[in-house]
Amino acid sequence: MVEIVLALLAGAALAGGPLLWSARRASRTARTAAHRAADAENRADAATRRALAAEEGARAADARGRAAEARQTLADARFAAALRETAHLAQERLPAAATALTHPRTPVPGPLDPATGTDELHRALDTALAAAVRAVLAERERTDAAARAALRGAASKIQALLIQVRSLLEEIQLSVDDPRLLALDFRNELTLRRVQSLAVLSGAWPGMTREDSPLAELCVGAQSRVSGYARVEITNHLREPRLAVAARAAEPVAIALAEILGNATAYSHPETRVVVSIEQGSSGALVVVDDMGVGMEPDQLERAGDLLDGQAEVLLTELGDPPQAGFAVIGLLCRQFGFGCRVEPSPYGGVRAILRLPADLLTLTDPAAPLSALAPRPITQTAPVFDAGDALPTRKRRAPRIPRQDAGAPAGHAPLAAPTGQTPDRARTAWSALQSGTLAGRSAADPTTSTEGPAATEGVDTP
Image 1 (cartoon, one colour):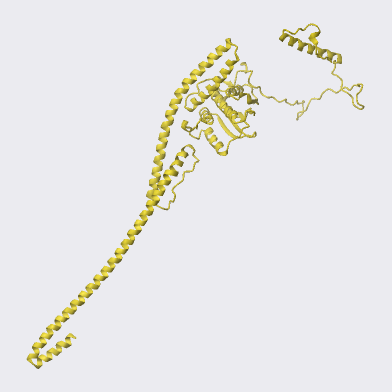
Image 2 (cartoon, helix red, strand yellow):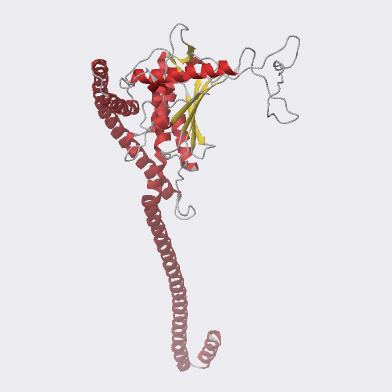
């Protein structure tokens, strides 16, 4: 278009001078207009680019806003998850971890949702849990050590005083015949057993020593240390009557048996028996105690088994109120002196406790030493008689029976004859002598009764 205008102007200039000036002015005007048009076009392009840039900036700003909003939402979710996990740590995980220190089978829950949050959060929570458990352990050990030290000192002093009381009572009983002294001595023994248990729990020596002691006598001694001793029935099935516990373990075994019998009598009806059986095996000896109580729940049996095996840690501060220390004392003695004990349901409906003594703790006492009159003797079964040359046992035949005819005997029946040399007159004489001896003994015990004259046989029927 511009080129056409310029061509026309050039033609007009050729036509004449006045027209040339006009053409030049028009040309300048046209060029100015062209420049302005180009500038306007450039400004339009710049405006378009600015608009596009502004639009891009707006989109970028919107994207940044959405990203910031998403980050804020994620941060809020993580913060809420951290709050929930922290509350779960304080309310559930920490108490369960503290309980598991005493009861190892207690489950300790993990995080509420391991998928939420970050690994750093879960590691931080686990670190806090481990630090809290270590702090609890340290404080518990410190507290228990202080309690043991205090109990050990008190138990040793009380035990020494009780042993002195025992010696004093023995001296008084030699010169004073008062049954109340026996009751006092018995209560002193009960108190001494309690103090011995406390000494064992506190890590102290039981406080008494023995020589090699027959196992049956130890069982009777343990029976005498429980309040329900009259209900305890001991049966001795030992093959060796003088089977004894070595001196180093005699008193610990007596303490353990007393604790077993104490539990058996305390947790069964006062009118039921506690059955004790002493058995001798091929690799040691067993003392089996059965009560007829209410028994124990499976979790209680499991806990008792852990205490008796020495697997569970025994803490004075966690034995209850009042302390349930029987199984803990037995477990400590078993672990220290090398014998074993376990509990299980009893065929009598209660609990059966089995105390196992290995062969290295057993010995035989001197045959010349007398056995205690109170200890039960072994139950022996009559052995069958073997005839020479027979592979199987047979019974000896009795002498043949001699029939005799008595008046009034039923027809077809032959009454037995009296043993050789025995007649009715001799039997009557022997019976009269027995009755007279009985009356004489009673008369000797009662001075008001005379053995002379008819009164001596008054009321006695002679056959």
